[in-house]
Image (cartoon, rainbow, N blue to C red; front, side, top):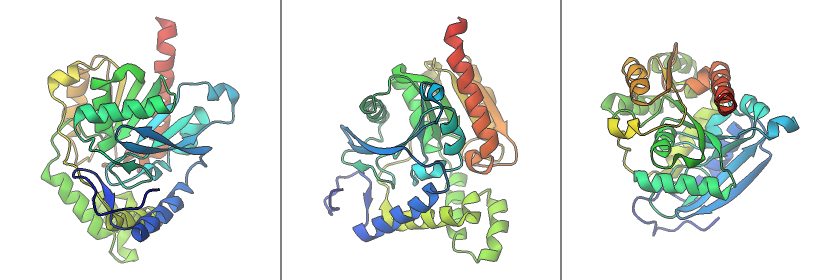
Length: 309
């Protein structure tokens, strides 16, 4: 990995220093260890830097030939956040978990990519570098915006898109940022108080020691240098023809679930939208079994669709 310098271009994420970066990586590795064991790690060069990817896969040869899943994590995190999902998903079909450049992780960003057209160019280039022509794209939070943007701007490689409490549907409001800051401060609370705070804030990070350590290390180690993405317009959403599944937490603070569960299927032909009870912004973590099963069923249906037509 290149040495970190102080001459990082504007709008490019960076680590504060090598020592904090290495501590963050160690915390990430503890979270990765709770999920499926990756078959391989690889670096893909794109016009925006080096994208680090974890590859998981099933033991069944027939499953290895199925359309793969590509996971795109949320802002301020890395692909370790998928630890509750990689065992079930990778037992069914190949899985690629991408560290998004600009966020803490093992990717190395060298050029800004927060503009929608650049984000689509980066992700298409990363998929091409992995040799993937057809994928089921799954995005959570900011990764949901990336997936939604891809479905609008560069859908050629997409078999389907699954959005988990995503960005891209509404402007990020004060209530979400207040939740983020409250959740961060709660990581410093005494251990005895954390379960109560986790329930109040709908924040599973507080009760998983490895996740808590990773989040705290990431905040200290890395600086994100991009603005919050703007939501897609209704006209942009109407262009999407990729099969789409939208799963929203009932108590989400990023979007208004009841509004979006009506709006998205009205604008995107054939889209499915559901509200997941008893959760907020992290349904894939605190309702992993339910979300994994729902995603795989949707992908199975999508894979069968061309043969039925």
